[in-house]
Amino acid sequence: MLTFAAAVFFLIITPGPGVLSAAGVGAAYGVRSGLRYVLGLFIGNNLVILAVVTGLAALILANRTLLFALSTAYLLYLACRIAFAGSKLAFAPAATEPGVLNGVLLQPINPKAYAVNTALFSGFTLMPDAILAEAFLKLLIVNAIWVPIHMIWVWFGFRLKQLDLPAHAQRRINYAMAASMLLVVGLALVAEI
Image (tube, rainbow, N blue to C red; front, side, top):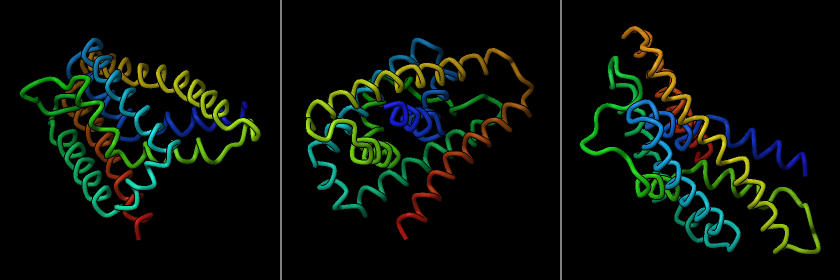
């Protein structure tokens, strides 16, 4: 079980669309807005987990080309918004701040959400004779680690903005965040080929 928990921690903490966008929302709009957004990510991630556990993800992933195109386009859009925010940390100004619905909508097109949850829910056997109990236990462990990690990313984004870094430093951070997002896109492209 400790191996499973360690895998959850390292798979979730690595930069991907969810944690990077949580940090971006925290930086751009503050902790309260960031937490509302994370609530949406949480709901969306649990919907992806439900899809993985029930096998619905197999149907979703059967049309990999459409999912890949949607997720790649969205990740590129996020990377551009971050990179071109200029000297403002994180996102370029939006007409409205991201909320719960935005977080929910990100996860079904987030390739990392499917990859991580498929690996976690199919790759580790904790209770081979009780698959429902195992799925429930894994769900508890995943969420017990997932929630604080995403809250930390929101806090990190908020605190980073409070540092009031010089414009060139903020631009470099934006470029690094955008590069991380592009790395996710590049890894997805390599995996697709």
